[in-house]
Figure (cartoon, rainbow, N blue to C red):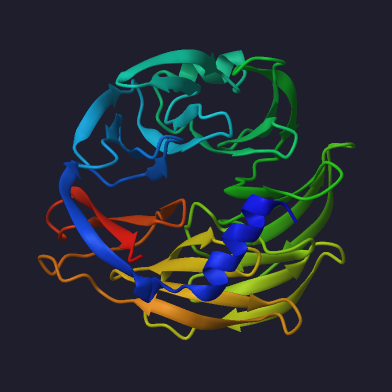
Length: 342
């Protein structure tokens, strides 16, 4: 096990959410719901909402950079080399290089075909909704109701070139994770289906139907070890054996609020966010295929606001950041920043 992973795993095996205290509430930073949060390599917090990206000072949390996008940002994250990638309600993605308080677009990727690309300039139903960085440095994009597109990292460059795609058959993939040997697990929220995709043959090797209510978490699939996949439901989780390609357990979460997000902290520890400003730290047992609650946080007392945790971001096991909405009448979104008490 590599050293960085060992340090990360050990930290979360010995520390809980109770050791993180709220240090800042950033109120009304966006006029609409926050779609994504992440951290740059230098520790600065980044948030996205509609067509605006904000980058904050890592010490004062004051806004340093405002980026205006031409389309609404559906998802945003950084890759291993520090490039900020935005997925947009339109037909393209932007790759940003951030240096100090300067930024520039180093590449625009258009994964749709030409006809969809033209129509998408006027139709918001065309959406690039999420990406994951693969083990080999390449990237897989979820392109709404169109394809799972793969792009190859160029040698000695931060840019990518088109590699391959799996064209969907009128189905909408909402999440995916990478397995081994060019195999992927796909989550289809609306069809209530899990699929296994072999990109060597570009074929679906297995379909798994399920009957639990689905979650709309941006991270609906988590690979906990070499074979156990956690699937986010509304108030349940499924455990799927990726080798046998079967459901091996259904876990009841025993909560009153709907699950809205998942975040993997280590090989056996995850954070789960719910409606009503509620976060649980859960431990997964790969022998029993069960989970248990390690710690939790309850509603933050600020303006009695609604706080649905549909985003979670962690930086160096030191900061936990989650967004919230103040009330029903206002779509203005804010952030809670928690810091580890050393």
